[in-house]
Image: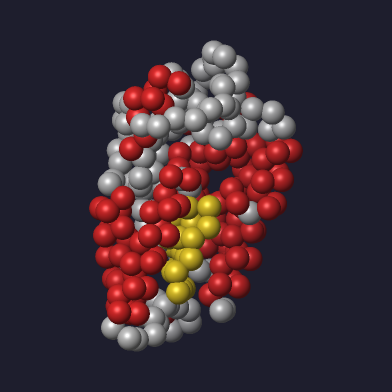
Amino acid sequence: MQLNQASWPEVEAYLKKSKGIVIPIGSVEQHGPNGLLGTDAICPEVIAKEAGDEAGFLVGPTFSVGSAQHHLGFTGTITLRPTTMIAALNDWIDSLHRHGFKRIFFLNGHGGNITTIDAAFVESYAAWSLDGEACPYKLKQTSWWMFDEVAQVCKELFPEGDGSHATASEVAVTYYAYPQAVKDVVMTPKTAPEGRFTDAADYRKNFPDGRIGSDPSQATPEKGKRIVEVAKKALIREVEAYFAS
C-alpha cells in the first residue's frame, strides 16, 4: 500500500490496524557516467515498495532530495542545506504524528543523509523533552545496504569494483527498476580510484567522472533484481519487528 495512491479513508482504515509507515529517503546527485541522478532515491523506493506490497505495510512518498553539496560540481545535482532538510523532515514527522502514526521508519539510500536524519530525530524528540512530555512516537533510520545479507550478496555479485560511490550494486538496482535506462559506457579507468575529498570542487578534481572506487559497468538488471529480493526480505523483517516494538 502506497500513501500517494491511497485515499484518506483508506489510510484511516490502515491506521486502525497499524501505526507504522516506511518513508524512502534519498538524494538527487551524480552517480558517474552510467548512473542515474535519482539513484539514491530510486533504490530505497523500489525496495520499500516491493516489501510493502508483500508484507502489507504502508509506504510513504519518497523524500527524494537530500544533503548532496559535495556533488554540486556535476550537472544535475540538487541539494538541501542540512538545516532545510532537518526542518522539512520534522514537518513530515509532525504531519504523520498528527494522523496517529507512532512508528516512522526511514529507509535511506544516501550516506550523506545519515547525520542530518539523526539530527532531525534529535530535534523532533527535543520538542517533547523540553515540554516535559514523553514522545508518543519512535523514529528509526536504516540504509538499505547496511543489512548483513545485502552486503553479502553485493560482495558475491561484485567481488571487485563495487566501490563506495556510484557503486555497481546501486546502479544495478536502478537498472532493475528502470531497465529502459540502462547505459553502456566505457569506464576510464575501469575501476575508479579510492580517496577522500573536501568540497564540491575538490571532489570533481579528484574524481573527474564522479565514481569512487567503483566499476559500475558490471551492473545489470538481473543483478539488481537479486539485490532487491534480498533487501526486501531484510526490510520486512526489520519493519515488522520495529512496528511491534
